[in-house]
Length: 429
Image 1 (cartoon, helix red, strand yellow):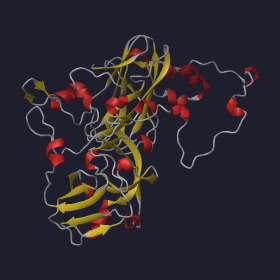
Image 2: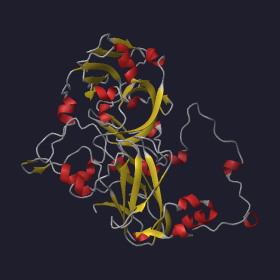
Image 3: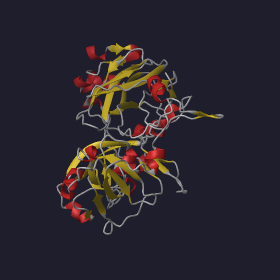
Image 4: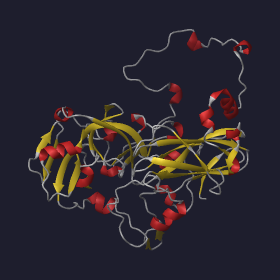
């Protein structure tokens, strides 16, 4: 097969091989020999084929054999500090993140809010301040869009001096993608009547820290949403039940959860979180503040650390790419540490500001390899190399005996090394 010939170094194959499909490609990719019905052995009747199964639950849960497909928790005992739940990208496929596996960051646990008592108020520089119940919002026309949410601190371990040996879940697990449904914020602002002096709004949550962030009014009038549903069901508590602000493509903490207040103002509020926590210092000494956008990014999920290659042969390299600037236009994959590249196939539909699954066939010869992916978006932005991102945001200002690294907005290339034994590790290349 012509498309099974290498198009880049170290065995990367033409992405168009996927278009041929059929038994020949399946046999090549898996190493199986396909047998006709006449030669097949009769199937054994296993225990589950000889007796009724378990009762159907009121709310479906995964098979007991999938018990390892869970989020990792940074604070499983709920101590009085921030809690993280990271998405297991290496155990998922496709582009939607199941609600129970969507990443979560809670600074004071998940607020337990009674939806009947919760209220959202829009006030400040408006002609008519309004207060909304959940029932009132449900009467507005609903809109839906699939979009990713990513913590500004996702992938921060890649700023470290030496590569941290951890899974893709630990390194990149603070990003997820879902279909969100709710009310366009522009519709609510139109009803309140925006004062021409208003240029920003301050969004505040109903959790104990009352996290608040300043949002440019232009974004609020563009594609912002008051999200009420996540993948078709009510928001999960960790994702802001009963309502959250959704700002497609923008830094996760700005998508304020448990939303209760939107105050229109002339200038940013300079709140605690935006003036301290989310204002990292750049090498030039300036604060990287009000940066908003989650830039074009990709990483390989299969294979990745923790997923062994059992023997030489054909494999599928797969991962996810996304950009806060719009659709992914191209993903290139390397198996030799960036010396040569092959273009990956993109799963349809390729949506704006959403996860895009990419894949490319690879014939591993059993020798050492270094896998990388690099993405482009429709606006012409290209994912930087690690050296490029470190040069721009690298080391923060030095203090005595301590050299701090930034903790926000890493979107550089990630490298996985494959040993001759099939083990996968994190490297800098």
